[in-house]
Length: 347
Image 1 (cartoon, rainbow, N blue to C red):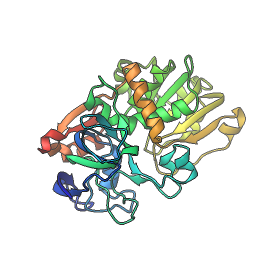
Image 2 (image 1 turned 90 degrees about the horizontal axis):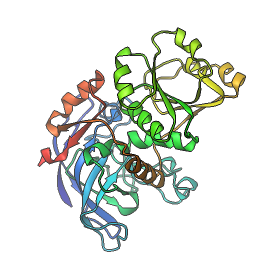
Image 3 (image 1 turned 90 degrees about the vertical axis):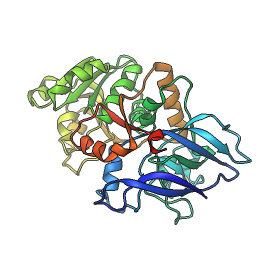
């Protein structure tokens, strides 16, 4: 076993602090990765503080991992020492169910094995994430980072990037479409960039007027402040597609009214339950759907797309010693738009 420096939460009420985890020596099909950067996702906070229930402690968060292959198992075919690679939200799955066979491992019918706050396939070995200096992963769950991409800005693509790319791609957003992105945070800012790269005309819908300048800088063609309820009527039946990234409770019905006939709204945030009326759906044959990250194949497709179009996350790079401060700032929306940990700071 490989003793590995990390940062962990010992309980839902304690700050993250230095910790050591045991990584396995690479098996025949494993790669050992030296972690260079790890993005900080809002879901890290939810799980560290057990806000979703069922958290496993001690917990080493982090599922937006970029690193360099340090060692490969004897039967590894895809990777060589020195390759720059990524690890996203899961590190294994059953590999046998219909979802896995379809390359949709995130929907594994026996449950995907999350990169942290989960267990290995044996059901008893805890998984520890990217707030650490290295990780051992089966070669089939590792992603290639295209050459020339800024690595610190790539890390959030492994979650925020695929979370927004998948529905935009799967529901067929194309050049000339009118696309709205609801919310301009870690997910929303990636939605703007990716939809724009697909050729769509992009509008940001945000409650906060202060986001207007950033929205336009990120590539949005228009900005609508939803704090003025009149805008919902003024922009009724305007959009072909709405990507809703908000995790706070809000009125889906109001946004559905902004869709054209046969338009689609996809939810990627996880707010508290809210009331949904059938009328906005029925009257214009609209669709309301949800989406969750992507499989290995689609995540690689997203990375290649972002490399081709020069798309990367806007980040603030921090040392691991500032992670607790970063959490508090995230809760105040005081980041533009994603914290990324430079793991060299852990030594």
